[in-house]
Structure formats: C-alpha cells, structure tokens
Length: 130
Image 1 (spheres, helix red, strand yellow):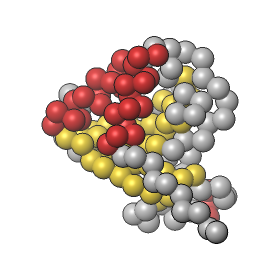
Image 2 (cartoon, one colour):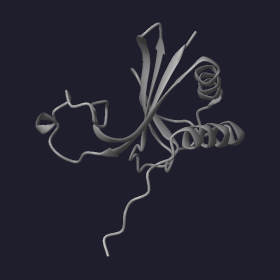
Image 3 (cartoon, one colour):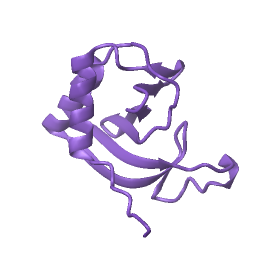
C-alpha cells in the first residue's frame, strides 16, 4: 500500500544532462530533468486517493509533445515504488521499463486525475515581463 506521494510541478531543463546538478533540492533528475516550481507531499487518505486515481488510468491515444509539467513519486514506508513524469498536454506518462505511455484511455479517470493533481499542486502562473 502506498503511504506517501510527492507531487512536483516542474519546468523542463533544456540543457546537456551532464551539466545539471541533480544534488540541488530544487532540481529533479527523472527521465526528463526539471526545476521544481512547486511541490506537495500527500499522506494518509490523500495518498490513497491519488494512488487509486493513478491505478484507474487506462492506455489510450496520446499525442506526441511530451513536455512533462509534473513528476509524481509513490512511496511505501519511505521506499520509492514509482517515479513518473506526466504531461497533461499530450496525455502521456513515463513508466519504468516501458517508456512513454498514454494515460487517457478512460475520459473520466484522466479528468479526475488531472483535477486532483492540479488542485493539490496548481502549476505556478508565469509572470509577464512587460
């Protein structure tokens, strides 16, 4: 049973991966490295709810942009079970051993998942430089 889930809103870092310092607390070095813009750790019922929502996602037809705005980490007793990069624009996520997979095969499931994730950690608005 998952007992902790971290949701990270990220901005992709577009540079040579060897130039990224993955030890920095505001950097996440998953499949697609990013700068952490906002985060929240869920536990108890909230961790259980997002885990159920994640498991309800079905394979479907995703698009091809894959610019993940979120990273999710699922834990059990502080052991990382799954880390996934998620792009809601093209409806894809990374899965260990399989690469990028579509997650939009069930319209209600993906809507509920997006609503939950973006309510818990809204993606920060960009400031306009006028």
